[in-house]
Amino acid sequence: MTEALTWAVLGGGSFGTAIANILAANGLPTYLWMRDSEKAERCQRERENAQYLPGYPFVDALTATGDLELALKNSQVVFLSVPTHGFRGMAKEIRPWLRADAMVISTAKGIEPEGFTLMSQILEQELPDHRYGVLSGPNFAKEIVARQHTGTVIASEHAEVVEAVQKSLRSETFRVYSNSDRYGVELGGALKNIYAIICGMAAAVGAGHNTQAMLLTRSLAEMGRFASAMGANPMTFLGLAGVGDLILTCTSNLSRNYQVGYALGQGKPLSEVVAGLGQVAEGVNTLKQTKQKADEMGIYMPLMSGLYGVLFEGKAIPDVVRQLMLGEQSHDVEYMGVQ
Picture (tube, rainbow, N blue to C red):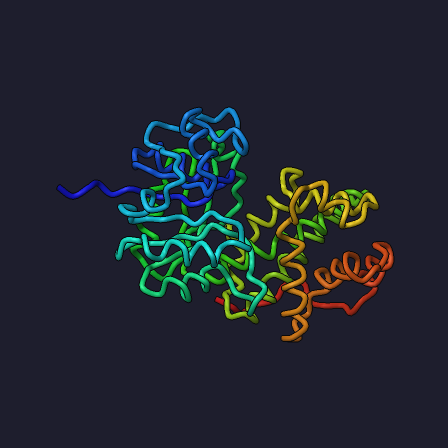
């Protein structure tokens, strides 16, 4: 007798746990894999992930496990919800255990420094025989499990991947939209972290609503300009994975990157901010990588360059702001002819 198909989410952080709970709530037998077997056993015993999402119980169809083979052997849809720095290693590790027809979905929002590689490009390289996609959008895990109405985006060239993810995650409070521009969706999820730092910094120095509106809008312009140069469609940034995620991350103190920017705006040094956070906010790494790539390709990104100057070149915030305001005048809306 053939065993029933399962779903798997690899990574026991807040977002991975939230996605696993949605799948299980939809009646799909789901494994939530954690590298720390003791933590997995504790979560399974207590029926919640007390470290990341305390107070939100697992539904019955969800099983926490530290056994990678068990999680993968019958799973046709696998979500990789691990940090960017461990993504390639995880892709290599799961290769022997994946079903031949398994679909692999990245939920990581970041860029691998070597070669400025996106997560789905890593999947292309490490799992070339599998279909893959990217899940991204304005999605705070705590609000997802609290059943706040939320939208996200699945991006893939494979229609079967889009259909499988939309069907398995759809609920009364979680809606999944589709997009074929995988690179654009990924870049939106990664680049917005840079601008969340900028917006947090602006809030700390007392910026008003006019300033915040200008920052959000010009941030979106920079993201679209960069993505276009990288081969993505700038129109993708008008959707949930672009402007939606940008607004969420740049206006909420739940965002780690916003918290970093706010602390920097209060005059705290980056080393102290990172130490207090306990980890490097993804936007700091993405800033370094994007600055190097933009310089190589000659892409005009004044906000991003200004933040780099403050964080890594010792420039004072008032001097950078003055330079930005008095710099070269530019058009408001680009890509007017792009369909």
